[in-house]
Image (cartoon, rainbow, N blue to C red; front, side):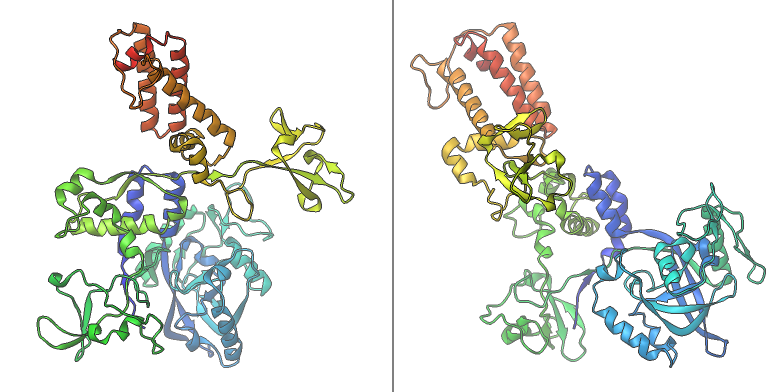
Length: 591
């Protein structure tokens, strides 16, 4: 199957380095760092030893982030999908290895790398030579090594890696301690030591490598120098990030503007004058049954000619994923009606980059990372003027349902105070209506029996819990302004908040008081429907101070996205204003 990939790995370092310049939540930046997964280490070559004990020309290359522990490598592990595996397996082990591989291929990468799962593997019947000390080490196949990371092979150092240690203990593979913690002795292998320290048991006269007594970092540097000088390896930077699969075998999606010549199979971009390429009308979107995407059914669209040579050609029938549109929508918002360019340069320079992006943390390693990559490509071709699309990212909290109160009962139906309950699962639980609950300090108890403490908990709104608040109902009862103001007043934007209907009552009263004070006191008849105020009185100095303190506070809180405290400042101002003669107050606002 033909697939299209975008080389996001070519931007890995820039995506990583430029995170430091962004005003984003540290948790989001850390998620992207982990997703990119940059690690520095070394690639080492282990020469394969045949059944007669002689060295072969074939070498197994492994990647390690701890080259300092090379003397502690007592076995190698290949991923089940490693390309060399079949050629390494001995005849006696062939059946066992093949059965193990088939079983491993039925697991996901997450299942294979789960830290808590029991480690399994099969000996290949083959050995390799440790380049540092010349020892023959067995080659195993195990599913906790992935073919998609590094080289698909590792040198296992059981004394200093948890997974390798568990594997070695299970299959009685030798363990060699080569790093001594700075504050202790070597230990007795009850558990591995994965930290840094001083090197021990790390010298070989035949190879000429001696790193004994060196600190781990210095030893790693010395090993890399030795590897490169001896031709046994080199320094290497690796990434967990993989190139972006950018093709889908479905009808809906942007068509990929490429044609393939019938005679040579050469891929040729569609001329820019023919862009944008649009999907053909298609009544049947079902799979073709031939392995080709549904677009292959549109013969009149697929069969075409090369615009330059006139040679027969076929259009690409894969389509782009949904990310093709969601990675750059913000640019079109700046210049939505431009039919001749992605975005006008002057408009982009005026509006870009996006000042504030409000969205959930679930976008951290997909949309936000892809949009950054897309934007950097556009920057490289001079389509945008900035390196990053979003200056500031804010993760908004969710609004939880109203607090639900629960009482615990034993098997006989007697109520039990929550502070006497050890395991909630052992007790029956009963919902208690709010009118039967009262607050006692920071706790909630039954009104009829204050000795019974209740469990008070707010949950994410869901139909199954029956705690969904319909905003349409709130608007009908209180008005849209009350709903909007209450949502901002509930708490900090970034925090999750609990809905409380009595809270919106208070906000609704605040708006009514504000209207009565400002409009009602200015009008002899009691109201001005359009809010217009016409007064001639001059405000006092103290009235002006009160007003401008409020303006300053609200401005500061809005800019800091602390809307709740800004609204509190307005409430304080209205309360203070009520202490002033209502006939004088409108002049304060007018000025």
